[in-house]
View 1 (cartoon, one colour):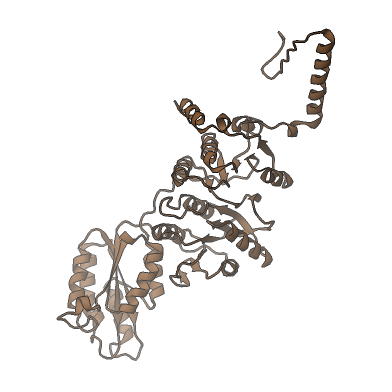
View 2 (tube, rainbow, N blue to C red; view 1 turned 120 degrees about the vertical axis):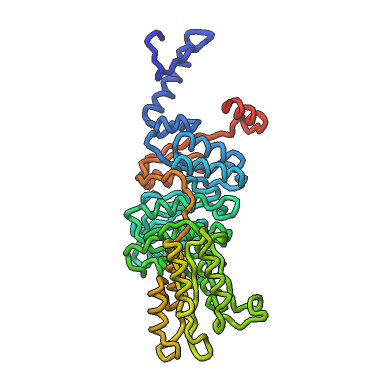
Length: 475
């Protein structure tokens, strides 16, 4: 006993006789011999802290305990500086938000709760298919959706770099897409990812705009499939919109593996002063998919609201000219969009009338940009080439389709939200599993160093006592 150290096991036997003591010690020797023969795999720590001491290189903790206990285990993992794959469901949404905010502040990821699928650095977590490595990075708020796309990519001869599940509620307004935004930031920095695919059930509108705004500035092609959501078009800049899971995979391998044009962050807002109602609606549809609603306003000046007592703006531009000067003087406005529609019956020289107002606005505020969509042909009486040249000399950017105009407008994105501390790109060197043994078995089968925690509910499942212990721990 005097020579015992911190790592030694001290066993004392109190027996009624020497024979009984000898029998007890022989039994202890037999049990220890089994442990020595079986090795460390037979030992299962009862706490996450102990497991991390056994496998300190593990950067991921897989959690599949009952929902009412899952948040506590996940928070402990974050406190130890580990990423979390949270399979557990029935986790309160308030706990999800708190966990994800904490992870974001620390440069960590929380995948879930209710996250069933992920492939990180080639390691498969939860329910994931065996697919080849490749250039496509996946982000999904749907586990089976991720599986469908990764499987189809494999069938088509391609493969994936990462597949990051976010949990089904991540794109809800309450959560705000915290994990999806982190994942998108990670994949746009990942040199192995050439194309990104976003998959989700219908997200909250404001969350979708925030996510697609970041995707628009990713500098890589991004394929988007929001199940059940209306398509804003087939393409906006580097974004491609799919109509099904299979099409998302097909688009991902059809897009040339070249960088997209990154957005140019700007401050300020956008105003559109349109004479054509359908043109205004098409531009509005594209902008609303990518920009937060408070950052833009599109006015259809041909609507009945604006034509009471005055001619249509395709004939009389007086109202539009007044609004152009008014908006240009507002320091909060950084971009003004216009349409110029030529043809029989339209204003004889719309560009000639708009040009002086554009020149004046840009001379007063050189940082202000004006972009014009010109609709017409070389046979129209206004002279298409002359109209375009007049606008360009005044300092306006000229586009011939609404899609091109939207592409330009969405390159000039509002400053994006802080996505927190960047999540480092690092290989999976090990993982701790707390919960379902099948997840541990899967890790071992893949050759991933792993430790299974022999988890029990705190305080034997007594929630009152567990709450007291938690308060004592945090005090």
